[in-house]
Length: 501
Image (tube, rainbow, N blue to C red; front, side, top):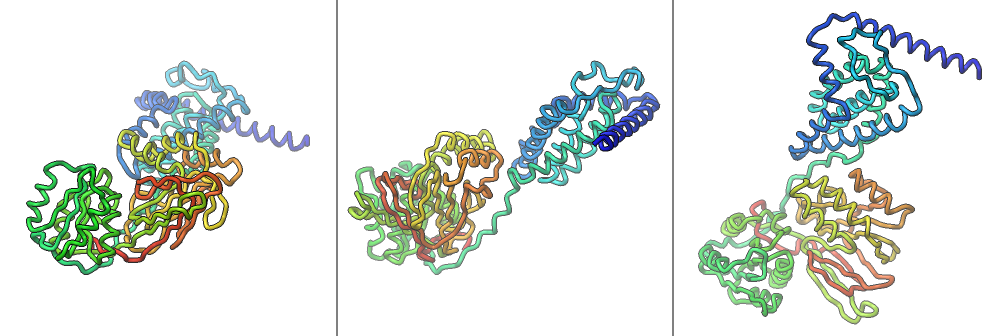
């Protein structure tokens, strides 16, 4: 033990001798403008101000630059905490003295905390490497600045060289520790469409359009606009007291109808899709809802895109989801069958999406997702049910009709319409410390790989409650009192007009 101790002391003595030799070499450098530059650079990096400024600039640029800034700040935060709360307490050390450097170069006032390790160096390396792991070009551009900050701490007498070396090592370790936090999302596949036969509709002859007047963008001018575009079309405006489903079916049954058009939100479009399949008609989706998720996926987000596709007769096949929901005491007293265009969900997912969408315009999607997730899951109560006869406690069961991207709990786009699968995403409370694991995953952006999240695909899925009935949201429309439900995929069941076919 004594030999080991002597060896350790000898090693420390050697480090101290190297430190003093390096500082003497710096002290012999001639005075010049570089002294003021390094002194100002060192001051700018105090408390991370320099790196926060860069992060603020990068955060204004969506995509990789913003993601790089997030990674850099996470690494900086870890490095700063480890350095200031850990190593400086465990390794007290006196800083260089005024006699070690010329007076014009020596920092004033000198910091009073432990010299070992250099917090400036830890933060500089952590931020720069964190940025480089996401955006190598930006990291390379920041590297000389980080090196300048690290060297400035020796040049101004704030630290010994070994302090800078250890601080830099801590910063690098923090960057590698956080490299999987908020990972860069893989690119979304290029949209693919399977062409389908559909008649070209020029003046509207053979087209029946059902217009839901309760749709998010409906106005009295909507009908006039559609009659100008399709003067020979049959147009039925569905008023507030009308039965939406029956009126859409009546439009599909109208003699001479070759294609069914619908103006409304996703719920209305889902009803029209079922009618179009029943009567073997192609569907023309005219975006008239608030969010128009399905219209976005078939690339008819604006009216002109839908009209051009209809007049050219370009259409594509799309799958449809089918939902059979049982209600009543045992789930058999009342059976409801629904067409699922986009998604279904159980649990807190609708609240999560609503909070994220409310915040993302001001904060951007990554930060909005963090805050929405922390708020939602911080107060959430898990639901108990059986999924394919396996009991689970869960916060979220999300079902997408088709494979959505990105592959985490915040899906946004669906590039393929007929892949024949249900996209299943569960966030469970089955695991120990599930809430803490989930909140950590939300904070670090690792929900896609966390043990409390489960991503899979299937063609069929069943659920059954073990207690209170559920509220199942299908394409944003809540269905209450559900005790059993079965979800399946109808492959290439519907033809839709789409400019991408």
